Length: 298
Ligand SMILES: [Ca+2]
Image 1 (tube, rainbow, N blue to C red):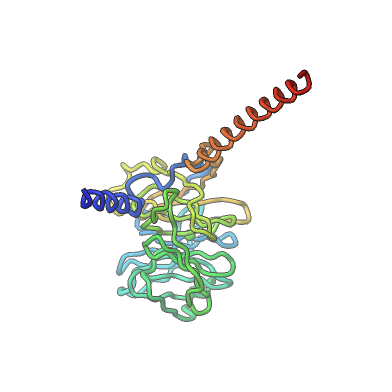
Image 2 (cartoon, protein in one colour; image 1 turned 90 degrees about the vertical axis):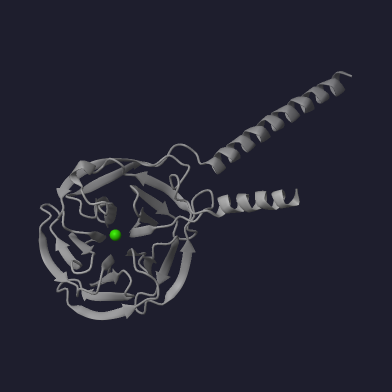
C-alpha cells in the first residue's frame, strides 16, 4: 500500500514537472492575427536570426558551409550584402547593438560582432551555452540556448547578468525556445519545430500569450522537414512584425489583432471565487436587513 502511495506521488511529480511540449504552450486561446503583406524570401536561406533596424532587414542563416550574414531587400527578397562564415561555424541568432550586429553560432560558443554597415568583423566574444536565438531589451542581450532558459548578457563582455526560466501556465518548463525578438516590452520566441510564437514576460519568464501560425505557410511548397517557422523581426518605428521560416519562400508581415479573450484557468478560478464572495456578501446583507427589520418591528 505504502509503495503504491509512493508510486502515485512520483507519477504526480513526473507529470507536474514534465516539459511542456505535448500540447499548446498555454491554456489561453492563441492571439488572433492577420497577414498584412507577403514578401518573397530566399528559399535557400536556412533562417536562424532576423532583425529589422532603421529600415534595413538583416538575416543570419545556418548550416555548416552555408552560414551567412545578410542585408536583404524586404520588397524583393534580394540579398543586397552578404558575409559568409567559415565552414566550421553554424550561424544562429542575430541582433543589433548600436552600430554593430551580433551573430551567434550554434555549438562553437563564438559570437561575431560586425560593423552593421560594412559587415567587417570587429571582434569575437565567447559564451558557454549553445547559441540559438538572440535579441536585446536596450540594456542586455537576451540569448536562448534551446532549453527553457533565457540568459541576459552584458553586451560588452557576454557575461551573464541574470536569467529567467520560461514556464507555461501549468508551471512546466517550455523547452526549445529559438529565434527571439523584443517587442514592446515582451520577448517573442519561436518554439522550435512548432508553429508557435510565445510572448514572454522578461521579468518573470511567464508565458503571457501565444500566436499559432499553423497554416500561414502553404506546406506543399516545403520539402525539407527542417523547414520550420523561425524568424521574427520587429519594425519599432512603424509597428510592423515580420515572420518567416527556414527555407521558406515567403516572409510575412503580420498584425496581431487581439489578445486572447478567454481567461486562463487561474483567472477563471479567481472569477468564480469573486462571484462566490459576491453571493455570500449579498446573502449576508439580506440577512442583516431582515434582522434589522425584525428588531425595528419587534
Ligand atoms: Ca529576431
